[in-house]
Image 1 (cartoon, rainbow, N blue to C red):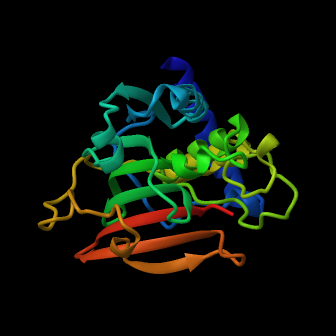
Image 2: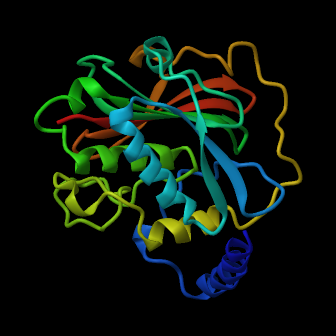
Length: 258
């Protein structure tokens, strides 16, 4: 913990320097001002493991990678991995749940869904679609690591560094690519962006009362994702928003299979 606090102080100094010397374009990849409310850094975010054993190692590595951030402690929490739990992948208040299941030939490889009240994230899920990960094209350690690393990161407030699959790899899982060999982990731009997102502190770690049906909303099917508000030029990634009013929204990041 002390090491993280020292790193956080260093990052505060870095942030002041960045005001005069901006980050490269690749590092400005938050999605709006959305973040977890907390009163101090580093804060702890729990990722519930509702995954099968063939995914556990990939989730452990993604958690370890993001735990390297100076502003957050990312830890794994034990969860139910039954068929029903993994299919529903129900969100848990104040936590992130990671799941895998054969969700079907629905087009998506991975999905991250984030519940927000105002600018504060309240809960999130990261789902991996084994219907595609069981095919020869995607059933590789590299593809699995890239997608789980990216979907978990969306629940922290991070967006993509690059959405063009044909550009050279940036060495981060937040970069879309056709060759995931070097895009399986965060890079320094990701850690810098997290430091900027969480540079300020909040006065509370709680949010106001949510409207009926918000926390337990059924956003499993595509038709329940709401309005598509962003799509990459090649259509391989998209962002949907379901608006409940008064600042309560559910965001769905989609990584479409090829």
